[in-house]
Every structure is written in structure tokens, then in C-alpha cells.
Image (cartoon, rainbow, N blue to C red; front, side, top):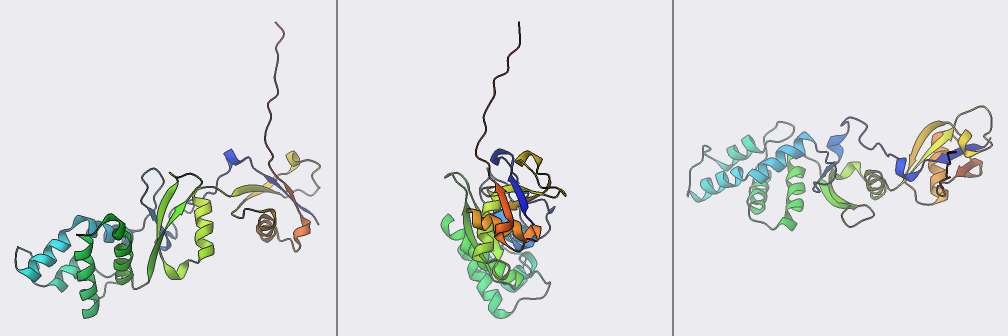
Length: 235
């Protein structure tokens, strides 16, 4: 049985990447370019706000160098109160030492170093390895940065997220009628967003959604452009 799919005009396609109302936000955070939508988790926000505020770095310096005032008597107390572990447990001695160095480094680093320090701190706070990378669209201004726990993401899934975030994939309507359509206009059914760039990849994605066993069963009506028709009134 043939499966028919019609491409939605690119200007009307929508990946709906954030339609989950924030579910799964802990697994990837998007932040950096104010011209594009950000989506961050509570743990990301509190860690970044703590580092950006600089108060913890001041407390650490005051305690270790005895050159200022702090309400905390030890570095461990300061870190556990301002940069607490996500699971609520106390840090080990080695973790406290690492966080101390990272917090101080962040307070006096170049902008280009901030992202690496941030994910290093997040790795300790959450107990999971974090990483970051920039994602890009088609234009130079289309960029943002994603921060994520490594175990949840692969190179392929990050590339798919990048495509959906900048809406550079394609959206298709898969026909659900009982009769075969004789034209693309007759195709009506559910929509499916594809991240592949070639026909074979798109057919594989559509076949998975439609339950088709062979790619030969997928018939694509690809968008090829639009044309205007003049309309006249009799005066």
C-alpha cells in the first residue's frame, strides 16, 4: 500500500520543538543569543546565577585570604549554602576543592572560558557529566548555545535538535484517507516534521511514522514553488 505525503510550504512549517511545555528541559538548555528563544532548567539557572553574581567567589576569597568579611566560617559552608548539590547531599572534600577553583576562575576569566567552567560546575552539582556546543541555522546571526548532560545526547540527536530549533527541516502531511489521492491537494492527515535533508532520509522518517515497510511505498509531493494568478474585475 502506498503512503502519500505532501510537503507544507516552508514559510508555514513549524517544528513545534517546545510544544512539550517544558518537559525534558533538564536534558537540554538553550541560552546565549537574546534574539532567539531560550529554554533553561532550574538547576542551570541557579548555577549560572550563582556564578554570575560573584558573591560566592567573594566569600571564598574572604575566607581563604582573610582579607574581607564573610558570614561563613569555611569555604565548605559557603559552597554548600550557595551552590548546593542537586540531590541535597553534602559535597566531598575533593568536590569542594574543585568547585572552589572553578568559582574563583569564573570570576576572573575571559568570556570565551565561561561556558566550559559552567558545564564543569554543573557536572559536579548534578553528578552527571555536562557539555556544551553552539548550534547554527542558515545565517550568521542564527546561533545559540546548548548545555546538556552528555548521557542523554548523541551527535545525531544534537544535530536533529539544531535542525528543529532553527526550523531548517521540512514538515509533511501524511495522507490518512481510505482512497488514494489523485493530487497533492487531496492529501489530508497528520503532520510530521523531518530533519533529514535528502529524499531517502525523509522517506525513512515518514515510513517510521506511517508504519511503511519499504521506502518504495512512500510517495512524496515535494514543494516546488508557488505562482500568482491575476484577477480582474469588470468596470
